[in-house]
Image 1 (tube, rainbow, N blue to C red):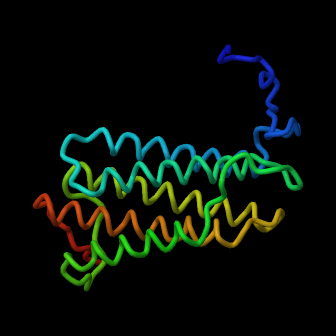
Image 2 (cartoon, rainbow, N blue to C red; image 1 turned 45 degrees about the vertical axis):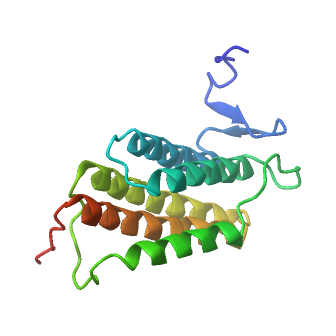
Length: 180
């Protein structure tokens, strides 16, 4: 299979099922940010100092993001080619957040993103996740998005924030308190 098709040379692309849209279409913008988030998680996973069980969780999340992207690339009325992200995936994130928070000192102030490199990458992923959530909300304003997908992406940004704190805690990274 060739990687290039030349079909998008004029600024258009196809959704799954052959529906043609502009590359500026909100649906394309949305799953593009999901893809960007997935890529930065891949970069985060390339870190050699990845504490367990974080790598297993991040690989599962990457798969969830691929499934979400497939859903977003599927026009209304077409059959979904992958299992949809459900409430079960959101609940898994909540359980993982709770487990990590149980090891952390309570958060009493805003903190600046940073610390050890892995935590910094997780903070970067969190900011991209927030953008993915904004794009998804914009898409939802025009085209109904399943509430489970909106909930998942919202919870994922919470997970990434807590994961960054957890990595800093585990690896001796400093949490800088924001001073206004």
